[in-house]
Image (cartoon, rainbow, N blue to C red; front, side, top):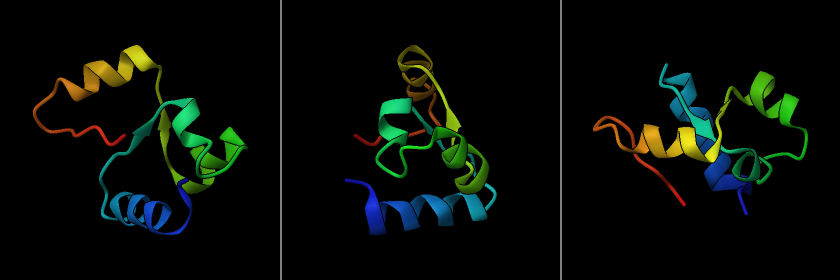
Length: 64
């Protein structure tokens, strides 16, 4: 999972100046090294509870 198209879409989203969030479990679909995922890809890691709070906002969308 993750890989090419998902990874490229998240990178394009972040390059556009938009935030992207992932739980640690979801972030591992991009790379098992969570430091890499945060520092090199630019994802912000959040807990499951934080993800649910973000999803409740009208300006965010959850992707499962």
